[in-house]
Image (cartoon, rainbow, N blue to C red; front, top):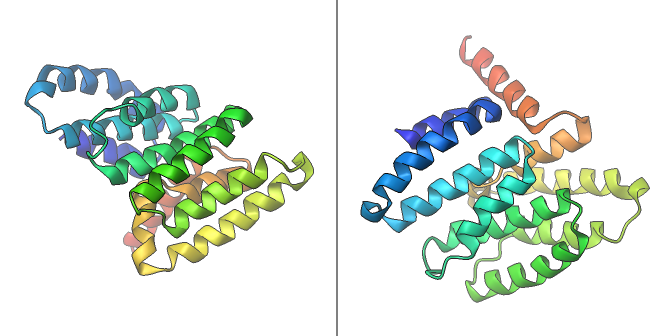
Amino acid sequence: QNTHLINRYFYLGDFNNGIQEVPAILKELEGHESKMDPHSVIIFYYKFACIYFGNEDYRQCVFWLNKIINRTDVDLRSDIQGFARILNLVSHYELGNADLVEYYIRSTYRYLINKKDVNLFQKAIMSFLRRVTRITSNNLMESIQDLYQEMLAIDKIPFERRVFIYFDIISYLESKITNKSIAQIISEKSDYAASKMAY
């Protein structure tokens, strides 16, 4: 039930209200964590991180991502572990932590190589972040637009498309290009989809 509730906030772009639900969900989670499948716990942590990312609270996003990344049972949900590291990279970029971005690019790449799980989506983001830490602010928007076009192309590849379930980077990039919030971009898409279904 909590998973469906969180997913609804994602779909609507209603991250602010989604954040208000986190303490109650967390309290319930802590009360049952000993009986829960560890995979389910990791998924909740990742969803919490994504809610904060969508609300552009990157510090809290990193807080929840670290709960995933620092787990010792690293074989649990290696897909979530991989995407947690990607989201961590982007969050540290948003926080202006250029040195940490450089470090996490290397450690994330090593992790993904070891897991044999480097896809086009992940390669594109790491390549972008490696470049963007060295370019001037004048060229930043051009690089963002290039990454946006690259992601649109990846989204057309059936096998690669599934990665956008984990991280809606297309909406994130659109927010940068249009100077709108991530929440506004996703909300507009949700409203458009609802209007199409009405006809």
